[in-house]
Length: 180
Image: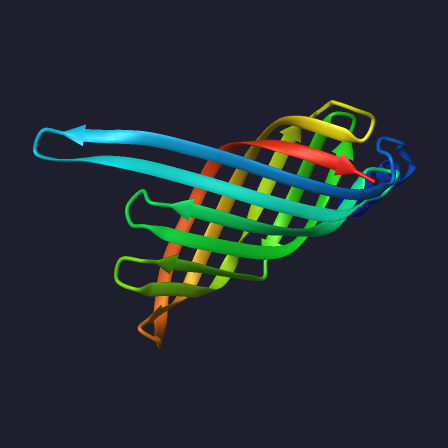
């Protein structure tokens, strides 16, 4: 009963708090990392890692955000791969803080080495950003993103088999929020 009371109190405070401007929100976020690995016993290896998240949804005047995300990841750290994921997003905007939680409904990872496609995704993404206004309707700031993704199927040359490939990561990003 005590937990129910606490949840009801928090929910009531959220509904009565005037912390955001109601409207549609478009929020791309990106990161690009590169590094070069050199070892006297092997060839030089250049590594790149790119993430592009595109968020679209609606922010209510009490701060609640409802929408979705489409996430692209290009990675050649261990093997060249191109990934995409999408799913519904819920979040909260309070002053300069913007947080979101996404549950992935669908996603694929295409690896060029071995011609393997991973699918049947299970996972989530959590984001927290601190944004500053550039104009009345445009905000920019740093974002920290945590991914936790598991692929449960691998397809090699069109033949599907059970798999368990996990990817977890914390990445810094820059986010741009457009409100309408």
